[in-house]
Length: 160
Image 1 (tube, rainbow, N blue to C red):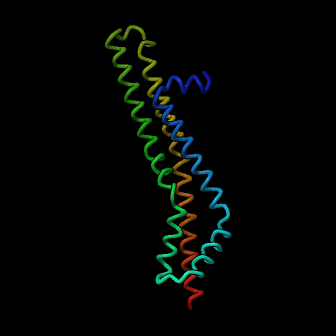
Image 2 (spheres, one colour):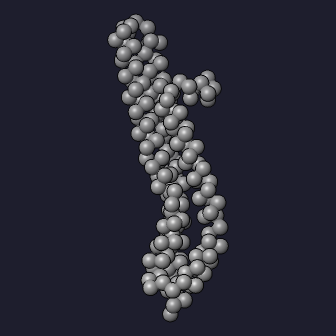
Image 3 (cartoon, helix red, strand yellow):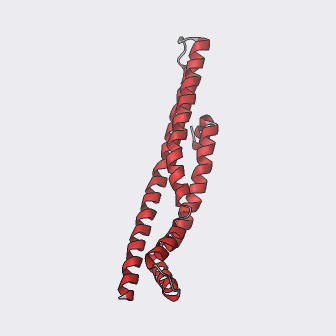
């Protein structure tokens, strides 16, 4: 069985997971391209903050970093929702298996194996989508936290 067969067998839930995965990876790539130039980004924000007269530099740094965080909640939500969608597919698949058993009895195991297959495919698909999104979200948040600390230290040293 090839990948397309698995996707089709998983049904609507796997298609939803594929769409979420696509959206998530677009944001991951976009944020990666922005954050890969961390030193340049740090310099740009420092210059921007030095040019403007802010009453509170920490608030200004928080504001600039929060702009960079935009979109990361989508990645986090995809990472959170994907295993739940996989679990929903598991429940739907098991339900189909029990319906098949009710209708045809236990004489032929292939009668209920289709539902079990759906259950396993959607579970795997949910985890395959969730794991990289969790990893990228945590990685990007750690970069932004370090950036925020560096900016606050740089600005406080320049003020003294």
